Amino acid sequence: DDWNSEVRAPLLRLIELRHELEVLRRGSTRMGFANDRICSYYRELVEERMFVVLNNSAVTRDLAIPCDYPDGTVLTDLLGSEDRGVHEHASDLEPGDLPRYTVRGGLIEFGALAPHAALILAHGAAGRSA
Image (cartoon, rainbow, N blue to C red):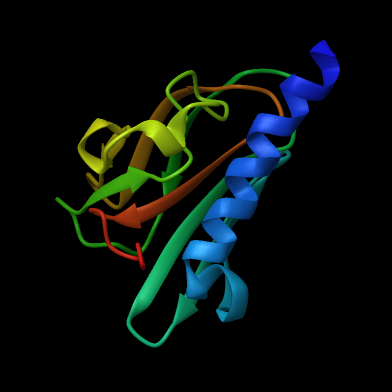
């Protein structure tokens, strides 16, 4: 049961986001950054764009990832990755409660990103659809 709940909550959140956001279902994929089991990419559809960051390593990583958003842009982690992994109660949080990151010098700094964790970042609360 522990294994199931540990895996189930993040998967349900990913499924929920995919159903909510057309850009995650139909958007094109454009690579951002890749190095040492860390990668980022963009999902883009017309005016919508998401920035996805993955830590595919077995260790926690302190990250500053290059991105093509203008300096000062605030990106919200739609997964609610408060522990730099997937927050299991993210769907219960209001957009203002979700972790936010500001682009500075062409980089987004995340601090510690847990092993095998992901972030799905949107400009503000953009990309949310009914």
